[in-house]
Length: 83
Image 1 (cartoon, rainbow, N blue to C red):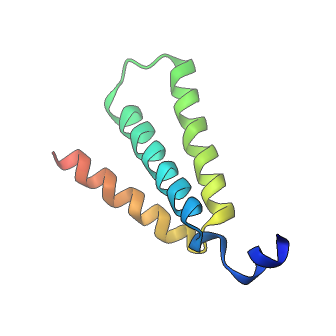
Image 2 (image 1 turned 45 degrees about the vertical axis):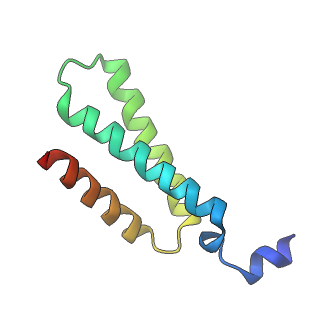
């Protein structure tokens, strides 16, 4: 199994692409909530930031181009905020 993974980058595996997309979606949703809801309880605020940090850590471990992943998140945030 290890040899197979060494031959192919993790990011090229379809399941990894799906997981990275889910992470981006989670980050966008959490950041939108943080930006738009000023009535969040401290626990909710902390939980949302924990989601962002956890998903970013996961993405950093799997993505070949972590900066590109962050740029995609920023683009999606901008698009949603302009609506």
